Length: 227
Image (tube, rainbow, N blue to C red; front, top):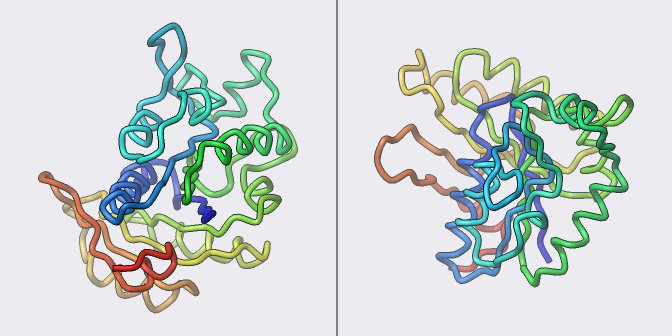
């Protein structure tokens, strides 16, 4: 079983967009893949439960079906940091509870699991722990989504430096153009290619039509896709 954690340089970097595209790419190559969104805030009531739009997108893009609460076990209504939302309703999020929820995902029969984080890399899950503590405990390889906009150089380089300090296995990064009018887009992209210590896996250009990933051979090799 292949497992990857998809994180972003910050909120709205495009984690869901990229994770969905990766799941669709895996579907094209007949891979049994599932998405996992352990934490989600900004949820709404539907079918007598809180559901999150991002988690639903992952479910629609996956080739392996699962119940909603398997894909998104911690769902909160307020559109705020998940650990704050959890405190407001008396829910405790811990590394162990996340691992227990992850075991349910592993039992769904997928060959590949793509876990999407929440917010950026340094996301608190309680008063002491961070989501990256769980990622490290599970020894999951990480894919970093860089939201290509003003400030992306600082966000990406700081995130990479922290990952390296923790001994995280970041297998590569994906450039996701979230600002179609970004000044000096190519120059920023070239700067990241030169400075980030991980290989670039793909580029997701801004598009108002059918979005696609411009794939590098590194990505196909990393996800063990034979074409």
